[in-house]
Image (cartoon, rainbow, N blue to C red):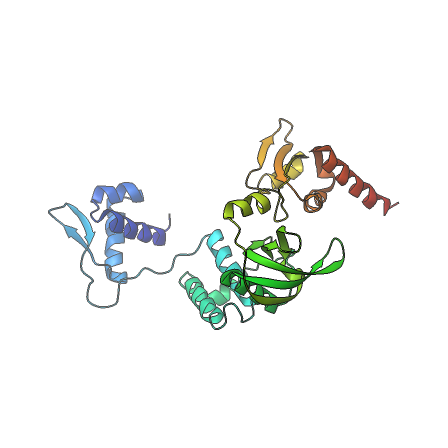
Length: 322
């Protein structure tokens, strides 16, 4: 570990154990006695760390704050997951218009930027040098998102005009919002549809108009929501769930094996390097689109209906090229 990491480990050991012997420091840090002494002295002198030796306990501990600047270690760089989470949150906040979080968005963004600044690099440098691309993200009217979010939080009914892309038609519905879900860079509204008298998921970007109603929303138990909308593949789930069995070629397996398509998926690597994946699904179109992305590197083994759908799509695509 580098020197800054050692300082953080010394700090953590003292905070967690209260008393740390010299032998424990050597064992935990994997350093020579001289190096341990140098690090402790450096922390006292440069960072004003109130580290003192307790003779009775035969170990080191934090004492009362020393006069002068407050003890504080310099920023430690974030790991990949933390950077992605921070920058993604900043991006999402930047995409929202005042509404649900009116007056709160910019202070929150500034707070996140200050967290990035606590690392070894400023947030301006991080945003300049690290980019996040969202190729599958669809844009919609931010004002509709604000109304939808308000209905979810207030537990009020919502009137919407919704565009159904598969059928290319517009419908007007009154719904009881249950929750907002962010899936693959897009927002979806899980709601009880009073027109269909059933649970439905609506892409928020496909909502063309939204209006809050005075009536209270119908409450659906979380267990029922998960059973209907969370059991199948992706966001487009349903009560009738089937299991798909896919076989990926060895070359594609290097990528697919690192992906999670569904929390309940079952996977297995064959002797020839091919990769078998089994996962539940309820809405065929989305799964078909996902499978088609892998072209000749994937084969649907089951069910027969899904295999036929994919075969038909591939045949139709091939016919366009003669």
